[in-house]
Length: 356
Image 1 (spheres, helix red, strand yellow):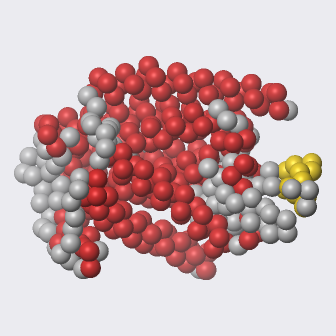
Image 2 (image 1 turned 90 degrees about the vertical axis):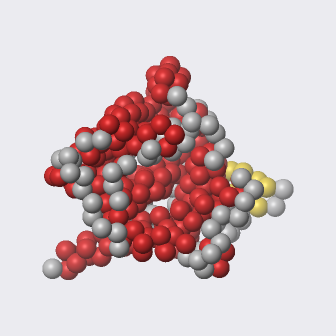
């Protein structure tokens, strides 16, 4: 009984976190976009508009469930659930701190990529089930885009796996915590044998992974349907895309999945390339600032700070770059990102052989 209760509590905590993050991210995006466009953004509900997101979600929850007459009712109702659940389940294998992993899996990275691919099915169901030409066209665009960009994203992550020799995200994070040195003297005063900090991160241990992370970050924007890769939801062409017929709670689930996906892909990049919950601060004399033994709260702080910084960059890019055309998007994926991802994979293989 306690076993099941623990899993229910963990699942509830993750759901509450995704909901609170979405409210925070929506408000942040409105304010960041307002700052970029030299305006104020929401200002009416709460101080500086801080309660505007809560007001919007309350309004959304009270809306009537509307199903188009010509829609496939079963697919129409099921699609938002599949979209959200597939993203939500991806949080299970993420390491939040030392000893804090909802589900510690040896194949954690493989599990996340497998479960996220189900979202594509949900989006296609939403477009087809709506029986709307704009929704269908948006879903077809989204499926083509997500399937295509999964390839360079997956190959860039395999470059890290080859270096780390593990698919367990917690193990990959631990390996980025300590940089062992034979003997390094600073100013001739003290000696450090385990420096740690940002120098132990994968992008500094194997510099070609900087390119791999850039490839992954760009591909992750396409996975989230974020600008400049937001053509599946292009308001000027498709009036919203695959979710045009959705309203109320069903639209809220699609919206929740999109922002949860932003955090999820950002956190995966942080874990694999940027040290995860490890501190960027190096060990100094007898102060083990980089050590994972400094506590769970310290680890949660650093991984949230890094991931939220990545999310802020995602938001910034949305309000800075223009939308790509479909042909430009596909050409960029197959002719630029995919060859570069294979190059990183090849370098990782050579790197691993030379370091053995």
